[in-house]
Image 1 (cartoon, rainbow, N blue to C red):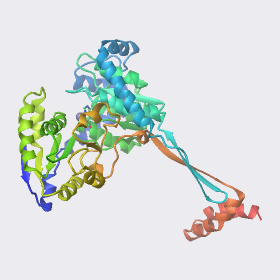
Image 2: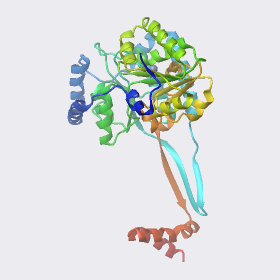
Image 3: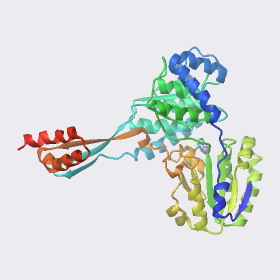
Length: 427
Ligand code: HSO
Ligand code: ZN
């Protein structure tokens, strides 16, 4: 792992660069598949499933019996683990419910705000080298709690035309309403336009490769919302001599194994700790089945030595990590001053994996520095706020003249009339 000692603030931009992503040529492919799916629905989706997933399907729909069969094949131990995670994620997300906010701004002018679920949501779960069934818990549980009516899930089939059993089991217990064997750009296009079998949705959630990310961005041009601009996983750890180097190394590797473009960073004031973690990483990486992936992403990663906590903090806020582990003596300083991070993990016994799976927080988080302006997925991601107002005769008398004057000043006579007529009727 690359070691950087005492970087100057002017060098931060360069050392905190994320691995570059090339999107320019992808856009044209995504656009043309969208146009085809819009015109020919399922037929085109099946054509691309044959081309990209190497399987020809009669039906895109996952049947009840397939779900039943899959859930029978998941071991009891794994089912129990999934159920424990489900229960914690439910507890944490149910507690995020807010009540109606009501204010009488003037006597007789009542305003209030209530939330309503987004009625139709689409969840995308990638296939590939690791079947991320935990992401279904993170998306379907809050969707269900929010009250979304249709919760559609798309995931690519394998070469036998099947979806991983744990994915189907998780979808079943979390209340997903329909599951489709479709992946990649064609899945996002299907949920954007709707096809003979796939419903059109109002908001699409979930991770994916660069093609899926660009497709989600294109979906927004067709009035479909998305959770957030997604990117490769990343982790930044701030640690000092109170941190256990083996634990920290295991955390860094846990995110490094996601993909070759993942990025992990250690920021520390202790040269001794940096040394120890570097050695631990080398030892632990050899045991990992995904060591080839982890090695590549470790190549994008850095061990940064800084002069003090204040400088560490400034650098961390500039980076805005998706995950931020704080394992230092002066814990409160970091917790009080962290401004930009998706999710924060505190102390030697809080591995980032806990948040990935089972503690209760959501693992769908802003990457690529978007923690500066985006929240991670939470209950509100599946809802929208609506405002209401009711004005009495007394109320319109109280604000009528102000509205008339403002409408007049904007040159909008009809707006003014809507008030004038009412005020006159009350004279
Ligand atoms: N760390 C990933 C989520 C995940 N990890 C799923 C394991 N499974 C992105 O936050
Ligand atoms: Zn992870």
